[in-house]
Image (cartoon, rainbow, N blue to C red; front, side, top):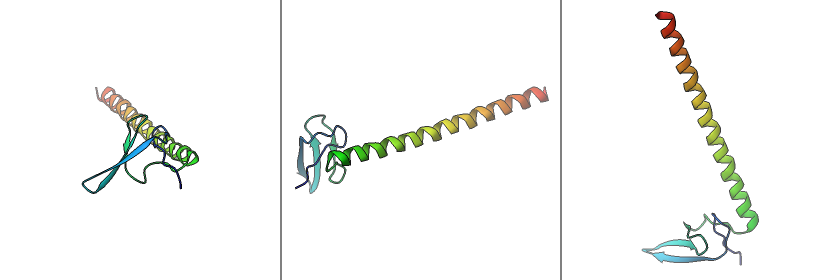
Length: 86
């Protein structure tokens, strides 16, 4: 039988409850609530899921920085156009 680990803290101290036909899993260490399929089934699985999460966050950060650079360049162009027209 495979163990179930919390996707947030990797603890194996979890409890499952069924409410209105839906299964919810709660970590007894950190209190994180998650659904079946969201937890890790091994520590290696936990590390892989965290690695993917970090990679996705880095990708989002890069996109946000690129957006800021574009806005900054647009602001500079508008400033130059205003100075040239004055």
